[in-house]
Length: 251
Image (tube, rainbow, N blue to C red):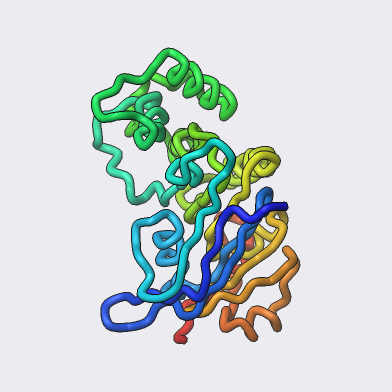
């Protein structure tokens, strides 16, 4: 397995405080990593660093170039859908095609091949019949599928998902992880969440982020290990399902 992405001695600040310190992480092709940690522990900052929305105050971020690929197209990103304004007037297929923006010259139109690929991805997610619908009319689960299509339309080497099970029902949550297992055959995947119980069934390894990053080379992690990593847990109920989640914790 070759390296595709590295964080080397990364530190980042929020305001005047240090939110991440001395973070090291190597991502190899076909890795499936769950990033867990309490609210306020630095997970969102870590994601923003990885996708280029923030710069570290210390350290290096390396995206290893795949053969014949531009590094800027090697990362697919699925943000929290709560950040999207559902009133924005755009159709489902145009949302998916917007994932090609970095590959397109300014004002260059999408080709038939681009549109065919978008429809193919929507069909893979079981929602090709919604291609012309305004995005704001979709349910949370349908919207997640659309934005996942957008994230993978460039066939990235690395797919990063930030709290993908927020605002979706339990059935779609299970469907989503089945889709990710299939995608993991061709790309590395990172899922950021505070719900340990769900991701532990699917990911290969786990990293706990709470100012520092502690990498755990397995998908099985004990309460004692979490406490040692500074990630205390609590049980909450979502519908009728108990979830093991990370409590907000002071550094």
